[in-house]
Amino acid sequence: MAWVTWRQHRPQLLGLAGLLVALALAALGTDLPIRAAYHRHALASCLPPATRSGCELIVSHFRSEFAPLRSAVRYLIVLPVLAGLFVGAPLLAREYEHGTFRLAWTQGVSRRRWLLAKTLLLGLLVVAAGLAFAGLAAWWRAPFDSVDGRIVPAAFDLEGVVVAGYAFFALCVGILAGVVFRRTIPAMTAAAAAFLAVRLGVEKGLRPHYLAPLHRTAGGLAPQSPTREWVLGDHLVDALGRQIGAAREDLAVAHAQHAGIDPQEYLVSLGWRRLITYQPDGRFWTFQAIELGIFVVLGLLAVAVAVALVRRSPA
Amino acid sequence: MTAPLETTALGKRHRSRWALRDCTLTAGEAEIVGVAGPNGAGKSTLLGLAVGLLAPTEGAVRVAGRDPRRDAGALQEVGYVAQDAPLYRPFSVGEMLEFGRATNRRWDGELALELLGGLAPRTPVVDLTPGERSQLALALALAKRPSLLLLDEPFARLDPLAGRHFLQVLMDGAAETGSTVLLATRVVADIERVCDRIVLLGEGRVRLDGPVEQLLATHRLLTGARRPLGRIRGVDEIVRERSSGRQLTLLVRTNGLPIDASWSVDEIGLEDLLLAYMAPEQLQAPPPPEPSRLRWHG
Image (cartoon, rainbow over all chains, first blue to last red):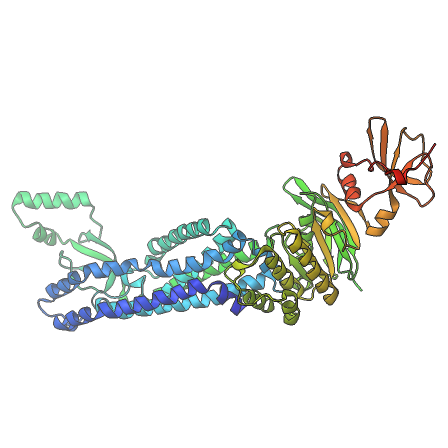
């Protein structure tokens, strides 16, 4: 089956390999100025805990210098997913479209083995490509990560094993959509929609709670940097630790302005502090493992359903 | 020894319509069975059930004693050429053969090459003529050395010359592998010369089943002027009757005794016989007797 799988998916797999090479070249090309700036600004000396004066300026300058590039790289998040969809969705949909399932499923290999062997082989390749992509992203983003940490979504989504998990899940959903819709384009569209829903749901709904978030109070009211943590919430609380609503804050600020006092100082004098809810950078690998587990399990479920449908179809 | 194909009260329903019903058949070793019938008669359904692409609604189908739906070992015993002979379009001829080798435990590559004749392995599948495509699909099916070979409308897309060539390759291959062959076709003329036996399907049911020679020997066209009163001597059953003007034409199954001399008796060709079974209004009056064969009857 290895030969058959390779031969049938050769265009996609070669495309995938080409894409990885192009990405590696692009990473190499854009990496030099970043590292140069990193050393020029002596950013290493600004990383916690060794902070020195003027660091805030240096860090924010470094951030803004490469902001467009970094946000462009953020969009590359779609690549592993597209790889999974482009390989996965046609796997069954194309057999139905061209009627070749009548050929494939009447040979001596059972449908179950046929589908599982293909899924396994393509899964391994897609996972390998995902890991290569993640490694590349982690290497390229290392200077930024040393400032901002890796637990923030901008880094978390691109680096580490979850990328392989996303690609595998996309592959499996694509395969499942292929047997449901039996046409490549609808299957790909539906799989993309399903992937997006699950992926966003997990990031927004589940990821902040993999482990109970930590809390910390900041004495000053002005934002601090760099923090290297994933800030989930940043609220004003009063001396008793109760959260202060926007209305109450506005009232206090208006009161201070009316009385001619600096609002910041007034709020501090009331004993108000900022309570920051966050996930520390040290949990990166734990979170990666949990999220990888979620997507691998979901992917396997999708494959199990696809196998069941393929064994029944076209009944 | 289990039969290459055995169906018992086999039925398949598509939504509310029965595509095949109450089909009980046994195909013997190395038998060549023509499955005839009009479109929608259930031919493809029967073949699809035998190769496990479809699941029976009722009854059972066994290939070499095994359930093709549950047992991949049964699939090894079936060679199947679907309608339009699906092949992987991006593949070359040689790659299609490699596909067959990779997906079958038993694979006779030499036989495949032999059946392909001079077809170059490097030729892309898209560049093949319809005849070559069919030939490749047939070679793929036969290289499994199956005990049962199923062909679904293999002549539909072939011109007469390609059809004749295909039939020749089929006969050579079937003789080489000793496979039982089920040939589904609308056009009886395509298979008349090669089939040992005909199964006629109509509206999902078996209308007629028997060896070709026996079918031809036991059916006669009777022409006469009046309706029979009671039984006609020598006739077992009146299958169809049709009156045109003052002439009455009957298709009858004979019982071997001499037929009542008041009727003009004609032999019937296989195609006309099957047509008459399929559609009563298709019963053709025998051609007007030629002068030299003029027969008198009182």
